[in-house]
Image 1 (cartoon, rainbow, N blue to C red):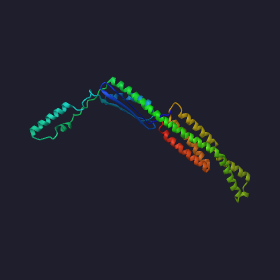
Image 2: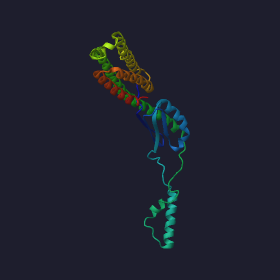
Image 3: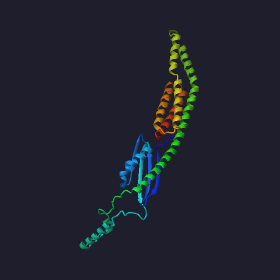
Image 4: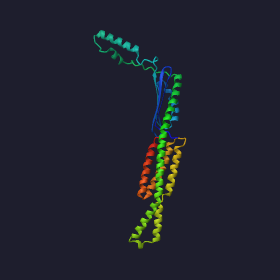
Amino acid sequence: MIRSMTGYGKSTGSSSANLITIEVRSLNSKFLELGIRLPSGYKDRELELRSKVGKLAERGKVDFLVSMEPLPGSKRSLINMDTVKVYLEDIRKIQKETGLKVADPLETALRFANVVNNEKVEADPKEWKIIEKLSMDALKDFNSFRVREGKALQKDIESRTKKIDSLLKHIEKVDPGRIKNVRSRLKKNFEDSDETKSIDPNRFEQELIYYLEKMDINEEKVRLRSHLSFLLETIKSTESNGKKIGFILQEVGREINTIGSKANDAKMQRMVVEMKDELEKMKEQTANII
């Protein structure tokens, strides 16, 4: 079963104090590039979470984000109210003693140090259990997204594989006529040549056979059909293996190129060009398969 490297998953829940949101996003990458962002109080759990996420994500540039917001009623103030009050009192004293006026004492006070509450949120074991469960839910949603995308990729690759197979059948139909035409053309050139009398007809026939053998594409046709069959089997297997599919496409490309180099026929060359076009599109799709 093909799975796309591109994916997105999300889950939300809450603890006694916080609304918890977990998001997983991924893009193409040859290897696993995993980035995890956790609230400061849970940084020591990153390695534990990284192992689980990495095992399920497998490949791709994956971003795993855990964010928390205080629930209504449990919201912790982001401003140190007592500190601000002290600053305001000091500003008023300075104004009274110096006679200087401050346009907006509150705005001035908020600019001073230690106004923002940087108190570290301590880890809550019960809350971490909730985060773990939500992480698995987000990863499940993420994997479902990848499977859906993978089905579209599989359908596209199957369609293009069948197109190449159809072109191969056309090549098989024109191949006998191609050899016959080449043979006739070479014989006619030989017969029309002024050097006919000086050339041994038997030797010419031997060289002609040798030349036509070099144009023979029967082995390439057999191998290409075998690779196409193997490709269809692989994309329908239970495992999603983009690298394996990539290797098979390399072999498909090798056979197509050899057929093209041996073609010596305009119709066949056009069909080879169409095959290459389908192959390149499959390679682009394969780059997005896990």
